[in-house]
Length: 89
Image (cartoon, rainbow, N blue to C red; front, side, top):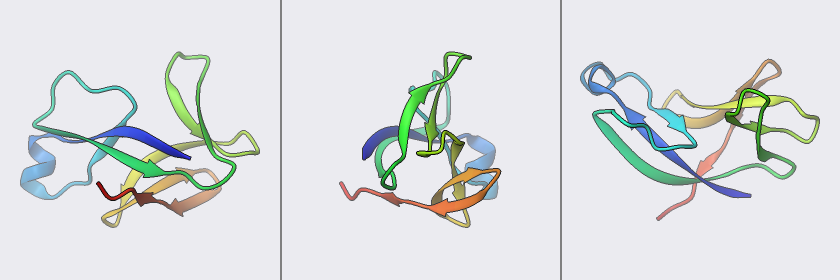
């Protein structure tokens, strides 16, 4: 499954090399934002949680967060880290 997310960096992330953040909705204020497409592994989907926010879920229902881990987009959960790919533009 290919999804669209917003990759953002604030001023301190740019200055100090901190990782990017990923959002399903475009944030109102950041120093840098671009929309990217990422490919989720088979069995993963995006769904809205009880709190009204969207998250990535595995086929077992485990919630995952999209993060930049050692300069690579990954899904992170209590079970571990799954590297994923950005779809080339």
